[in-house]
Each structure stands twice: as structure tokens, then as C-alpha cells.
Image (cartoon, rainbow, N blue to C red; front, side):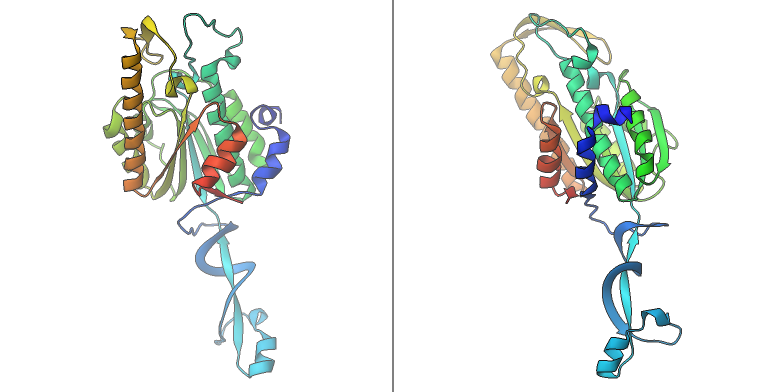
Length: 315
């Protein structure tokens, strides 16, 4: 499992197996899993008693209660069902582009670049959530997107599929323009069953709020509980560039001459904060979840601090 060892160290996997995804909607899947639904079924976890009726399974007859009360009761158990988890990972060019100052040379190895820390953390988080789903025997599907779906893995179940998940994310590459709305509009891109959808992206949406509305509406229409994980590099959150520079859009490759003064940087930070507030507000209005995770945050803090703190994973 060499791909998995790169993204997630082996000692990390047992910790993930003790966590579960906190899907707020109860689910009723097609195959038995490890997640409670509203229905009563055949798991080993006791739920309640009810009065015996002709035709009930006699194996559930509680003779202890009958001997004490003279009344016939049968035991009921929780029904454990599967959850369909869908993961979309943004693989547009901006996810793998470093921001550096003129005095800071680019890394000889692209995998060591600052921008790639963002790309690495996004894939680590996606791998972690995916492995948690497989460990709970939930149904998992994953795709990488830019303006369309670049690559995807069909439905998987069980920890035996973990190597496919890790290898898929290990081999994913960035490039091209990104558009979540356009990618989800591609026929067959949307999940076919209600479930939980995670999107890992820097959310530099060309269409802004309008594109976000469109993307979330598409997901909502398929009955998804949506989680947006916003991954930004420290340079994007707190840029240190100064002077007269030509800034190049990593996706469109268009450039613009800018004099980066303290006033301009303050305006950028205010605009970024406004944009993040919009993302959070739009999600909250639709009963969806939004979290921001800086790319320089350790994976442990991201999982057990941010995601657990938001009630998205529990252990």
C-alpha cells in the first residue's frame, strides 16, 4: 500500500478506524452496514420491547419477561444500514500552485512546493474521510474535478478497497480551470443515492456566489448532506508579497500588473474574509456544513480539532 503510506502513515489508520462520520440524517440503505437508521432490524443492539403478535419471530420472544409478568413480549433491535459517501476533490491548477516572493526560489522538487502542501493536505483529508467510510462499511465513491470530472472511482465498500482509494488520490494531478458548478452539471457526476457529500477545494469560484448556489442546488436536489472543506495556503490567507509585481492566474494564465502596498493587502484580506463569510452563510442557509482548514495545519489538528470540533466526525 505504498500510495497509502505516502498520503497517510500506517499508524494513522487505526486512529481513523475509531472514528465515524456524523451523518445528521438517519439513513436506510440497501445493505447492512454499521450505521443506525430509523428502522428496527436485525443488529445485535437492543432497542425496545413490544407486545408479541402472531407471526413474530419466536427467536425474539423474551421468556424472562414472560416468566416474571405473564405477558408475551418480543425484543426489537436497531437496524444498522449503510451510508453512501461521495467525495469530490478539486484538482484545478490553483490547488497545486505555490505563491512565492521574488526573493524565494522555487523548490527543485515540485512535491515540496508550498502550493503543493495545499494539494497534499486536501488529498490527506479526502483519504482520511474515505477510509473512515470504508471502515464503517459505508458505500464510498470519489472523483477529482476541474471544469469536468477528470477521474473517478465507482462505489467501493470495506477496508479491502482502501488501496484503491489511496492509489487513486496518490496518482491524481492538478491542472486546468476549476468550476464546481460546471463539473457537477456533467451527466453522471452527481451521486445517484441520497447520502453525505464532501468537497475539498480552495473554492476560488469564477462565478462566485452564483456558481456556489448552482453547485449546492445540484447536490441538494439529490438529497445530499453537504460538507465543504475550504483548504487555503498560508500565503493565500496572509500574503507577504510587496512591490510592483505581475500576478499570473494559475488557471487562465492571464496576468495583471499590481503595486502591492500595505493598503492593497489589507483590502485583499477584507475581501477574502467577506468571501469566506459568504461561503459559510450560503451553507448555513441550506443546512450544510463549511469549515476552513489552513494548508499548514497538521493533519491531526485538522481531523481531531477542526472536523471533530464541527461535529462532522465523532469517536
